[in-house]
Length: 143
Image 1: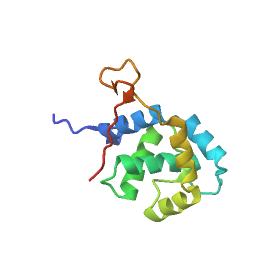
Image 2: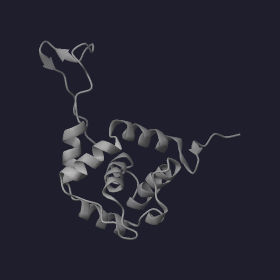
Image 3: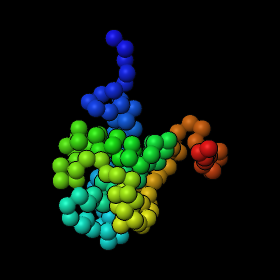
Image 4: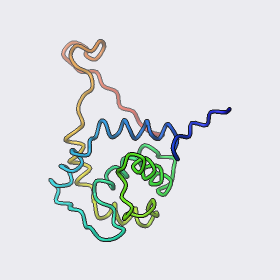
C-alpha cells in the first residue's frame, strides 16, 4: 500500500504546518490583536470572521506556492477537522471573497499580532546563540 501523506481530507504536512502555526499563534492572541485594532466581526451570512481571515493570511504565507483558493481549502479542511469551521461560512472562500476579507481586515491586526507573539527563540543558555553579549541572528529570504 503506497503512502500518500493524505489524512482526513488533507495532507499530513498541512496538519503539521497548521498545527505548529496554531500552537505558536493561539486563537486568544489573534482575538486580542483583532480587538485591539477595532476590527470586529461582521456576522453577515457568508462573511468570514476576522480570526479565520488572520489564519488565512498566515496560511497564504505557509502555502506560498498555492493560489488563494487552494490555501483557503487547506485551512478550511483542517479547521473543519478541528471543529473550528462553521457551516454558515460555506465551503472554502473564492479568490474574490478572500480579497474582500483581507481588505476588511487590513494590516493592523497582523502587525499587532506580530508584536504580541514574535520573540527570540534562543535564550542566553542556548549554545551558539550569542557571541559575547550579541545575539546571533539570521535573516531568511524567499526566492
